[in-house]
Length: 379
Image (cartoon, rainbow, N blue to C red):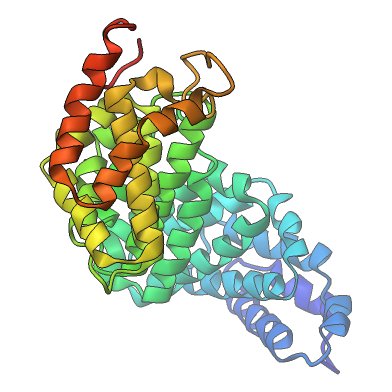
């Protein structure tokens, strides 16, 4: 680092007109080298302090005339700062419009051009860092749409690690989306397409996105049926269950089963779609046949929930699962569980006759003391 004048370096970074663009590029390359090769990062930060250099780097992104090769090195330099300390993130978000400018550059990148592709991939890595500390800043800057566009339309032109980083950002951003967001139909449609992605990690991230969105709906006490309307989510989840075998990762199967359970708890329409699907029985059978303990347990929980909804109706769900029906007593959940324990035993023993008989006789006994119960909806 001897011989490097930080003030001169900063001055060159702020240049960018005409012949000065080459000077700016040279300064950026030099800064990247200093950050990457320094054996004493504290001394490096003293010479090139983030409080001075990061705003200057961000302003390069705000320059609409800056070429892709300059922006790529700029993104790389910012990423190196964040590699050392995520505390630097706030220096970036404090520059008005900086995060949005980075997202815009990613959105308009031409992946068939090498320089533009390199810029896009570096922007993904940069935004992944920023998202760890300032998720809302990336969300409000349009990061979700930019990332989904990259993975859904340009996966053939990007490296796998870039796709994984992009989906990591998407997963975080989905946790910030409001159920009333007007972009939910478009985003859920894109996520639905990614459920069938040939990269298992991308498909798993899409599942986690739907899980995060479902959680947002349930926390707001809203019906999550909108998540399935444009994505054909229920059919795709049941299709995944049908394909379950001994080699299927248990955590993946558990995510699918947990997501289906939460969707059924939150929506009577989705419950009916699940119960009337031809894939339900074969899907649960595949899960049980795989004989993976965790997946089998989750599969039985889903079956228990569906039977509960069929026999008791939605009012039997605890307050944590559905808010529109008041909880009649503190013991209602445990009482309902005892009532249907024989149904679960029949499933475990694969006694189809006992299961059918229990379902057919159960509701008739209850009709003596209760009004007619809706199979799927609220009373």
